[in-house]
Amino acid sequence: MTEKLKINYPIIVEGKYDRLRILSVADANVLTTDGFGIFKKNEKLSLLRALAQKSPVIVLTDSDGAGKLIRSHISSAIPKDKLIQLYIPQIEGKERRKSEPSAEGTLGVEGIDREIIYKILSPYSDSAAYLKSLENPLSKADLYEDGLSGREDSAERRDKLCEKIGLPKKMTPNALLTALRMIYTYEEYMSLVGRKKI
Image (cartoon, rainbow, N blue to C red; front, side, top):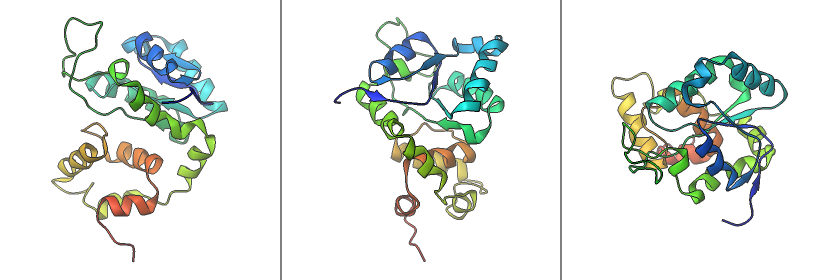
């Protein structure tokens, strides 16, 4: 890790320790949801909506059940084209400041290595990366063709792919599609799933 990243987009995380972790690798406007506080505080959601009118916003919550609920709540309030959904890998462990691990036994944003956070955020230190992802032709039809949606075993297939590329398990097809479009080019995705371009 070299100098701090400069991120132009607001970054939404769950708590103050997550915020400190982000600020240790990036100069950015980092807002917290105060955990489940965002469900009670309409003004916080109003602020996020206002920010999204001016710029895309990055959402980076923990990969556990609570993080997914918070992410879902934010996603229902902000237009999809204004959300940059980023994910931390599911890594077993316990945060240093806590006496007990989380209910699911995995690290949250605050406990993830700085190098991993840096790698997750680095494509967005250049806003051109986000605009480029909008041109990516990867679609729901591709996920269907590759068995990642629409089949009985699609959830299992998505989990295997997520494990392979360092994304959390239990992602919905839509969430996985958004993440894949941000991280990989169409050609890289084709190679990832072992499909040849016709």
